[in-house]
Length: 247
Ligand SMILES: Nc1ncnc2c1ncn2[C@@H]1O[C@H](COP(=O)(O)OP(=O)(O)O)[C@@H](O)[C@H]1O
Ligand SMILES: Nc1ccn([C@H]2C[C@H](O)[C@@H](COP(=O)(O)OP(=O)(O)O)O2)c(=O)n1
Image (cartoon, rainbow, N blue to C red; front, top):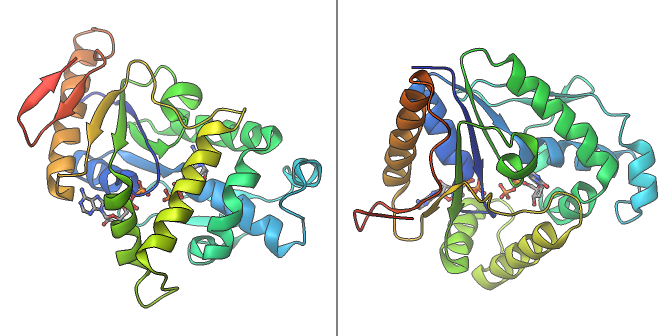
């Protein structure tokens, strides 16, 4: 298969991470979780006493942390200043602060640069998941997928994950998720947005396996088109369960 660059974007809980890891593992591609990078810089700000609501203070500190992302889909890894950050970046404290930090243009410039160099070094191809990969970070990606799901489905998936850890009720999870989507979609710098040429997949009624199967098929098609020298796939909306493809 040709080395393809795949951008997977969408709001929280639509299945970006699970789908991207599984697709990358199935097709032998590298994998990058860009949300983990924004979480990592946010965690560094919090642990170093930078007031996260002060955009100037965040901007001034944005060049300081050294963030290193692993790209193996079987063992996603992220470190900050040499320390493993994969656990601490998932706390609710980080989740509550990450939208403010990631809205700061200096933070985005820094992290976007990191993402582009990781993608450029992935000789065998890569799946990059986030919010602005198809629109801003990798606008020339061979395939762009935009995952969606109803707020109810997303909240129930998220609260299923939090059970036993930092348990919250469903409505609290739903409110927090909607608030974060709004913040991520309304910021000036590179907001969460579907690229015009992205394929939209509504995962509300699909199992994770069905979503993975659908995206694997789309990647294989994009790789075949690339090796034939054709352009990126046309924008479409896929509803795999109903067996329909509409444009
Ligand atoms: N299609 C799906 N159906 C049911 N659960 C799903 C589906 N896709 C993902 N999940 C589950 O929902 C949770 C959030 O998925 P995740 O991949 O982390 O989403 P995102 O990266 O978009 O925030 C995970 O626990 C995952 O296993
Ligand atoms: N490309 C990206 C990826 C994430 N972000 C920001 C906005 C998101 O709310 C946070 C956290 O992203 P992450 O993908 O870890 O969030 P969820 O898994 O959906 O909870 O980072 C971003 O601004 N741009």
